[in-house]
Image 1 (cartoon, rainbow, N blue to C red):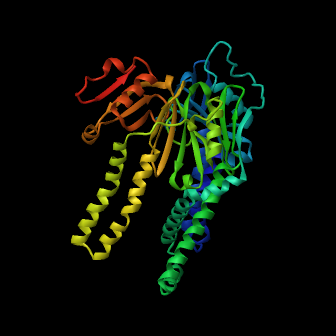
Image 2: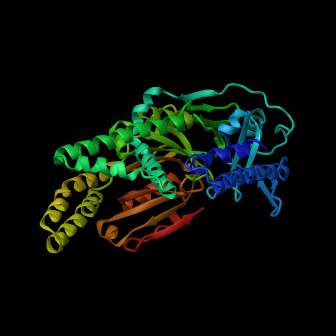
Image 3: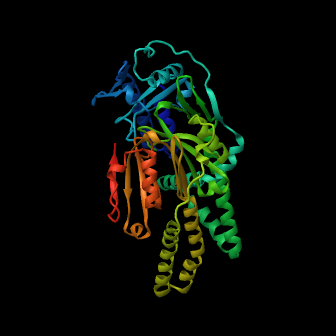
Length: 484
């Protein structure tokens, strides 16, 4: 750890050192600053190693660290939700891993959870099994070894999935962030890189409009495709989803930084199938777990990266130990009033905008706004088509969204309360929003714009006798929070 922690920090500072040393024109203060930063990082790594101790008992995990400010973190073992094994490049060179213990929705390093950085990879694997075993009389002792047995493979890396990478737009975002970083970096070093780019942009702009648009579109597409594929490979290379003998679902992935996240099956309350608009157009999706006490922070709930939607359906069934995918359950359509609400909310703002532009702006602006009206109406129609809900013997299924369509499958036993609400316009349309509250995932999953009678019947059937005593009499406004 004395070597690994400074090494990881220095790798992150490589661009800074390049600017200070290589591009610094040999100035003494730049060399001194670089040497001083390296010394401070090494000393910090040494102090961190000297002052860090951890202990695992049958009841809790304890971590003590710090020199000037001493910290003592203690996490009860029955609160552990996930165990995340991460190995950066420096860790992998020395056969080490960092263990991140996840404890809930507000998990933040140094606050609710804790990190053991770094232990040997073999010890990390043993602790993974140990920490996910809730303290009991037959739990393995902290000093004992765990017999390593192969897990059941539920899904694995497929190179053909790379075709879904450009549909996530992650490459375009990464390219934009990289461009901004390089631009700021060159400004700090007084380097002239914008001049050639500006000259190239002027040469392109001098060409016919159609050629300028074509060149710009082609450059953006190439950057997005290449960047997205690279990001996808770095994040998900070697992806493998398994069910381990210790009753955990485990996801392993990563090229430069490897990551292994394990979730106890007894904490699983369902799955979410997420279909962003572009990914859905390419018949793709990705999946996430709905886990007790664990929200969406980090990526600890990732179950499947962008992949064929058929694979996402299959994985959702395999993880929940079901014969058929619950995400393919036939859904009940919502009433026509829900369609009217979506069309009005999609079209009316554009019409108002077009009217304002016609009065205050050049004539072409309101024509552009008016031309977008059919696309907005199509988006509203798609939002309505995405609405749906169903109730199975074991799960509540709710779907909604258009730009990002989400299908949530939540165990009925995981529902701890209901929230029934109606806005002014919903009351006029005879609609309600029924929200199932739970201690897992986002904490709340809504069935939006459902007929009032259907929504209340759904809540009562999903968890019998929970909502019935609180139902309002006919004619009275409905807005209740019911928790068991």
